[in-house]
Length: 417
Image 1 (cartoon, rainbow, N blue to C red):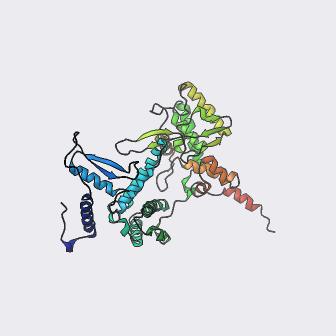
Image 2 (cartoon, rainbow, N blue to C red):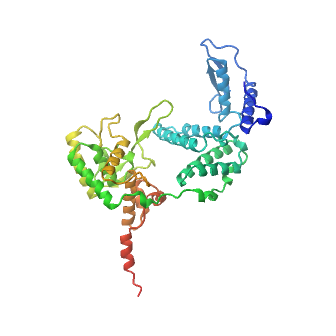
C-alpha cells in the first residue's frame, strides 16, 4: 500500500508516485486475471503486442502479485498505455537500439555503445527530479535547467556536452515519433547560450608526441626487441606507430592480410564490456569501427619492420596465422596489452602522458595523419582513406596544423620588393 504524506507536505515527486499508483490500479482493473495457476504452477495472461504476428503475447509468473507486476511493466513499455517518465522513455530508446540489429557482431558493438550510454545517463540524470518527470510535462525551460545544472556541477568539454544532448535529443525525438508528446521541445532549446560554460577542448597539437619523443619511443622498442626477441607487444606497438591504426585493429592482423604493396585492414578486436551477467571479454569481428575496409601501403619502414617481425614469428610462433599471437582465447594479444606496454615505455623515458593532457596510443594516429596531410599539400581526403576517418573528423580531431618549417620556407620565398 502506498504511504501518502499529508497534502500540504506533498512534493511533485509524491504527486507523481500517487498518480502512478492510481494509474496502475486502474490499468490492471481492465485485465481478467486467472483465478488459479495452470497445471505447471504458473499464472498466465495475454497482453497486446503489435510486434507479434498474433498481435499479443503471453506473460506468466509463479505468483499473482508477480504476474500483476509483469503486466504493469508491459504497460510501461513502448506498446503500453502508462504515462511515461523521461527515464522510462530513454530505457525504451536503448532497447530499440538493440532490437533492430540482426548481425550478431554488430549487436556486440551496439551493446558496447548502450553500456556507454547508460554510464552517460547515470552521470547527468540519475537521481535528479528531471528523470522522474512525465515526458509530456517537460518544458523547454526544464531542459535548459538540467543542462545548466550539469554545466555548473561538472567541467564539461564539447564531447561531454554533446553526449548529454544526445540523450535528450534521442529521448524527445522518440517520444514525438510515438505521439507521446505534441511538441518536441528539445528542438526549441538554443544551446549556444551555454557556450560560455563549456571548458575549451585541449588543442590537438598538444595531444601528439614530438618528433624527438617519437624517435626515443622507437629506439626503446628496438632495444627491447633486441633484448627480448619474442616479446610481441613491442612489435605491436611499433606497428601501431608505423601505420597509425586504431588499437583494436592491430591484434587481429593475419599473415594473409599482408599483400604485395599493401596491408588490408578489415577487422578489429573489440572489448565487449560487461552487461547483464556476462563478464567483459574480447571478440574479433569482421569489420572495422566505421564498417569500412581499407588498405595501407607498404612503406620502406613498414617493409623493414615486417621482415624483422616475420623472422620472430618463424622462430617462436611458426604455427600461428596472426602477426601478434598470444596465449589467449582469441589467439592474439588483447587490446590493453599494447597500451599497458606503451605506458611503461613512456614512464621509463619520463614522457608525460596522463597529467595535464592525456596521450594514449591514439596519439600516433594524430602524428601519422598530420604528416600525410602536410606532405600532400593538405590532402585530407587521402589521409581519411588511409586511416579510416571522415575528412571532417580527421581535420577536427587529428590534424595538428601546418608544418611551420615548410611554411617559413614558403614565406621567405615571397618577393615584396
